[in-house]
Amino acid sequence: IEGTFTGANSYYFSDNKEPVENASIARLALEKDFVLVLDDGTDYFIEKLPKDIKMDYYNQDVRIKGKLKEDGTVTAYKLQTKNNDKWETVWDLKRAEMDDNDA
Image (tube, rainbow, N blue to C red; front, side):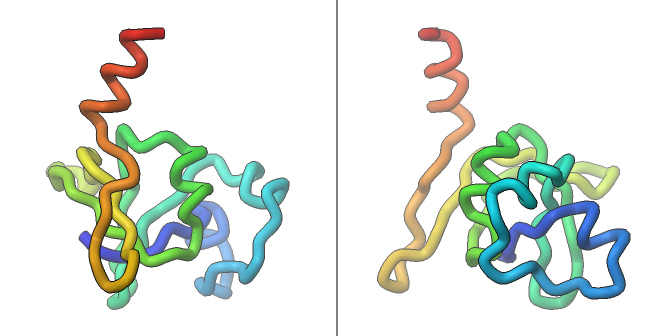
């Protein structure tokens, strides 16, 4: 699934659905969660991907590899960003879980 992250509260409860350009870290921190919004306006909550990672890629083109659940949420396995027209993995669930077990 390809789209951009935006703040869930801003997206659902604001008349303006556009992401805030150059949003401050403080403003983003006030968001409880983020949704992935596709070009057609479809949105998904993304599970397993930590909030701080979503904040890092706010309003940037991303690709989520994962599983769409019946309730409309997506369980993320990988997060990818585009670099020189090539998708690169910047977060991986298996790697994150291994890092957690090492801590």
